[in-house]
Image (tube, rainbow, N blue to C red):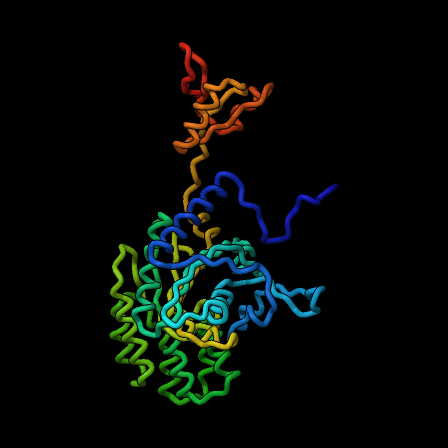
Amino acid sequence: MNHTWLLPEYIEDILPPYAQQVETLRRRLLDLFASWGYELVCPPLIEYLDSLLTGKAQDLDLKTFKVVDPLSGRLLGLRADITPQVARIDAHLLNRQGPTRLCYAGAVLHTRPAALTHSRELLQVGAELFGHAGVEADREVLDLLLAALQETGLGEVRVSLGHVGIFQALAAASGVAESERQALFQTLQAKDLPALEQLCRGLTPAIAEALLRLPELYGDVGVLATARRVLPDLPDIARALADLSELAKADAGIDILVDLADLRGYGYHNGAMFAAYAGGQAQAIALGGRYDGAGAQFGRARPATGFSLDLRRVVGSQSVPAPQRGILAPNTTDAGLKRQIDALRAAGERVVVEFPGQEAHRAESGCDRMLVFEAGEWQIRSLV
């Protein structure tokens, strides 16, 4: 049996009417970003591997497909995230001195799916802000994310705020080696409490207690007051909690929660982080946060913050889209009919010309109306 039509595991087509829903949402989001001053960039799907991997993002490395370039012999990567590419554009190509706002939309590919129900090909749309280290930039990016979530029309959306600086401060105070620090980070990222307890053995009691308390510091903004009481009085922790207090003031009709153990995303983040969830799903539909210095490998470290969301996940969280409707037109060279069709299409209508002998397949056209010649003119009549 011929199975050449089969796709690889966790790779799938997007069919009508979902494909139209994805494209409509992509345009609306890019228009929204443009109205905030974010300029569109289109990075390539494939690059030299070392430019796609930023800092200590080991999970990004594992998610990246690698191939050898037959022209140069160098290792190439199929992008698993567009953010490092946009950081390269800001640092090496645009070379602006002040704040730079960029946005993008494109496919990314992962070696493994994030969950059994997810595709390995994501349709990533996002916005990045470079050149300002203050919390004002984080606030703008968060506000833009909230506006984007409202644009999607998703119900039951919530945003979780965290700050990787809190973990970094505790890890630095513990004095553990880099390998142990990475193990602590990954354990907190997975929220594996038994493993976390094991790793905290041997640490000073105050640091161990603080790390073990992080997974409990989850809820509404009142969590921040609790964190000030139970976490060590370290300057970096105080600054992180102050930033989160500022970000938690966002008011867009979407639930804002705080999760100080939420270290989702890639390892290059180093400040405030946010994740958006919809429909009670455990996996985030959008991730973002601060990742200062991502452009350092391109010769220019700049403050940076941004977010991205997956259009596949967004559309998958919505109700089934209504099928496309339209107007069926007969196949004729009548000049009056052509003018009528042109006018209807210019007005935004979908007009499908029916070929001879295809009357039996009208239902497949998705049209609910038809142009008929009556009383000396072309008129629209219902097909239902």
